[in-house]
Length: 248
Image (cartoon, rainbow, N blue to C red; front, side, top):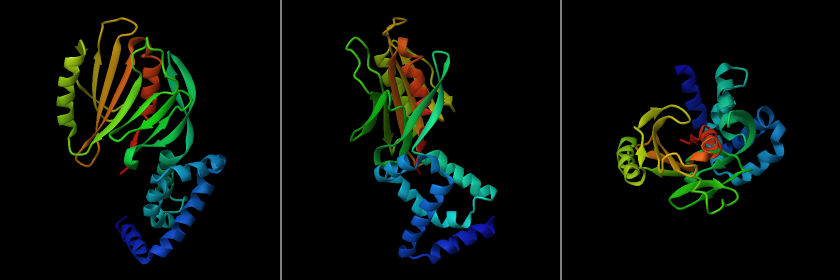
């Protein structure tokens, strides 16, 4: 493996900026053949809208040329790229006890620092200056409490500091706040849960997930829905959040 690492370094250093452009063309051609044949039309659309894909592929080009898809290492690398960047895919989610196949679409988050797959039949992603919000595609009637999932990044605040602040914040806003717990699903990090108004159908529910951004900061994902929607919107948010990935 050390020998292979040296080969990779030497190959990367050999290429000039002009040859990198050629490598990008080669890598896209390779991905076309190996990964996205069945989605060629959708793939082309995604190339135009996504800034993160060319950036990652440029950096990985020399490595891909060396690792053929016939090796275990090469196959693992191909699978990782496919899992992150396939433009659309089908997931199976449990909605009110029923397994439901759902088509989801790749979306790039703020500053291209994360990606997530969204059920665009029901939801939309709204990008803001400080946060991104996933909410219902069609506005809900006024009688319903807020339904949304907000994604924020705090680049200089650790998860532990965020958790302490959120515990205080939730305690002041909700009548019941459960103890913070470490979780590995739907994401790896900390989970805070709060509910207000007891067991009424429209009792507001909040889940807050705090995730280490691997660079000294945190992602904070806040889900809001109401008690009756726990097995509907709550379950769909859970499934989408399983597809959340930080782009390093």
